[in-house]
Length: 346
Image (cartoon, rainbow, N blue to C red):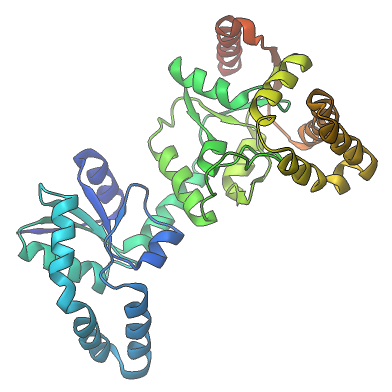
């Protein structure tokens, strides 16, 4: 069977169009740290073998390392073929390793012997990372959605998407809602590198000629950090903030967080006592102990609203405007938001 070797742009475009399986030939440890979105791990070497072979390469050279690799993994080649057949019964696969070298080529040879059609990424995962980073430097028509805590910005983004707009849910990609309590109820966060991969991958699927809505975020979303080039473009892009009634925001926060154990809420509240002030933090904790969740939210909103106002003043957005948003009539409010965006675009 013929082997295709493609440059990164051609490789990714062909993979997205094909619907085929993408195999990561690196070790499981490398895969777990970060990988091309959608890839499935089929390591040529397990973590232990990779360490042994790496040592052999440093101490004895390439030939010794190759021989050691076949000694350790050769007897398991049939397992890899069977796994590949399970993943790709149509026998069409895309493969990459770290630099597009020995591991991906050996796996490609093995699968070709079993009748697979194989496409390899020239330069491997390393070239993919350069491709991802370049997406953050590319100027795009970002439109930032601002609003105070509890406004429902993430939900609004998804309503905009349903209305035909383009958007990126940064908090969804980060598995974190951005606040002190943002990790509650969320899946574990990705590594920084994989978060960047997911973000760049989603940007690559969007039309750069059309506007892309993103939520107004600080540099950090939990422990994931927005790439510097992306963040710089965000804070300079036009921003539309939604103005939602405080009582509505309070009820939205209650419905989202009051379901968690009180000791967890207390722990998270105490974690920001130095920033909000020990006395204010104590009052918030006392409200939780008393079961007065509405008063607790009110105290926390005092802190978050001040923080939001301060951070907004530090951002040099080219345009900064506000649109009232009523959740009891959100369809009308959404149209007003889109109309304001259209006015900015003129």
